[in-house]
Amino acid sequence: MSSTKALLTAHDVRPKKSLGQNFLCDPQAAEAIVRHGRIGPADTVVEIGAGTGALTVHAARAASRVYAVETDSRLMDVLTETIREKDIGNVTIVNRNFMDVDLAEFFEKAGSKLVVMGNLPYYISSQILVRLIEKRRLIDRAVLMFQQELADRIAAPPGSRDYGRLSAMLRYCAEVRPLMRVRKELFYPRPAIASAVVGILFKPSSETVSCDDELLFEIIKTAFAKRRKTIKNALASGKSGAPPALWDQILEQAGIDPESRAEALDAPAYVDICRWYKALTQL
Image 1 (cartoon, rainbow, N blue to C red):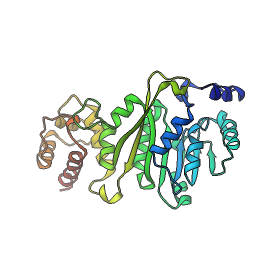
Image 2: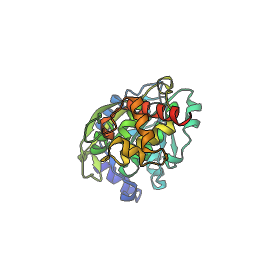
Image 3: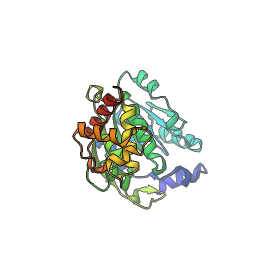
């Protein structure tokens, strides 16, 4: 931690709470994340929030190319110094908000699907995950670090307290595996809770063509927005305008109890709802 703090101090950079900046300081933890993520010579890595370069260095040593995306312009000199001192030549620093990055550009340069890595700030983690899901045709897998509570929600199975919108969306299009925990003492500044690394392996497009993504994700969002209601009442309160009687018919055709709750349904159940919604509203 002292070397990271000293590096930031030397460049007159103080971590910003508004950006959720908790920098990974431990080289062994960074190396373990890259190893658990199975980063290899064929991979092109897009790193979200490169920070001081702790993870960047180890990813670059394992991968073919790393695009180190960092929104904070104050860290450009810090990143450049870290990469130069380690004599690494396969890193491209991108000073941009990840949400504004054109992943298709990296995909075209790589000639293959990307690996996305990063230590995600809590305040924007959900938005980034949704964007990765939307852009999954460009991505082979993601190796992401979250605060422990969010990592638990992402990997949660149906029927559990933590199962929610993101869990259901990911189960539709990916396999999610907890990879490792990272103690809060290994960050500067030290966060309030521990973090966890999650591996997300996206399924081939051929396995997720049975429903329109936009409609499916809207159905899932609507279901979990009113998760205390029955699935029928939650969906009937959404933006679709479909009356409760039609939702009764949709759920009956999908083989789903209208009195069940959103958290009881796995991704295939939501796909069935989506398909029957399209079928019965286009008659």
